[in-house]
Length: 371
Ligand SMILES: NC(=O)c1ccc[n+]([C@@H]2O[C@H](COP(=O)([O-])OP(=O)(O)OC[C@H]3O[C@@H](n4cnc5c(N)ncnc54)[C@H](OP(=O)(O)O)[C@@H]3O)[C@@H](O)[C@H]2O)c1
Image (cartoon, rainbow, N blue to C red; front, top):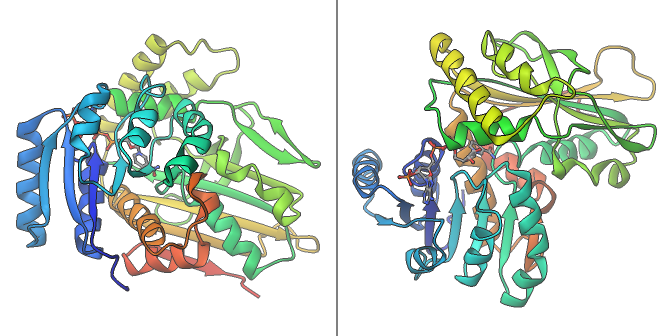
């Protein structure tokens, strides 16, 4: 890969499961300097030490910073070009995005939290005035599903129906803000596109989807991805929807509680459910771990079997997220993105370039049925 020009990247949440893998990918695949940010200094030092040892690169330091405090954010981001947000943002949506733009940095935020996405959307004007680019709902999921659709429509412009589905087998998790934000985000307000418009779907409108080895055929629930909303009109699609296969095994019994129509989803209840989901994942978690995002597409004349499939897979969900962030960082640094302004990652990136980068960073990209 051509190198990204040197600059300083700060990772808010750099000591977390995803943040440390993003740091590893940035060190391995770019020449940028990296600052890990988080509240616990000793954990940051420990993670930084291990990353330097493992990568053999000393372009890394650590700074304690509390994202709940705008002053702490500003001082932590001094001298930084791009801030990568890899921490839960629920409850910080009013403050953190504004503090980041006020700090004069470009932003790549992988949070799934819808209110944070809305805050970034509303900061478009401020980002343009500041000459900065914000990529939100970045990462693997969200982040890449819209890229798969764009690639599919280049390879098979005759497709009229597209269905995306994700499956993951996660290693043990720690209960806490990130896990509960993940669950609260997935149980949001699913929509599917059919008959020319987006419809609110019931979470119980499940579909059985074959996600390939080792996931097999899974019952999948519709979920919402803002990055897909503009695609039916752009590509003339008749149907588009995205599904999640949940967390597998007994974790899904708890997860389904939050999905039931009419279920009360207060923060307290979602936190309680997320502790149960995490407990169940941790009791049954066993390799092979991994993640897969699969697109099936049908053309007007095709039968039951999809005419085209495109799948991205990795045996390390967190490293694959790091690779997706680096793909975004590379297009940002190369000046290939629109803007300045605020953009959903899946809408802003060049799909061919991003998927080629993912492959170079060891994420499998498997395609069949291309014209
Ligand atoms: N789009 C995608 O593909 C994708 C994929 C994976 C994860 N995610 C998202 O990424 C986020 C992180 O997930 P994770 O599983 O990596 O979480 P995690 O392991 O719990 O790590 C969270 C990190 O955030 C830091 N943090 C928490 N609150 C903070 C604050 N107020 N100020 C500064 N740092 C703070 C934590 O360190 P301290 O506690 O020491 O501060 C820790 O380093 C979640 O929002 C998740 O939904 C997105």
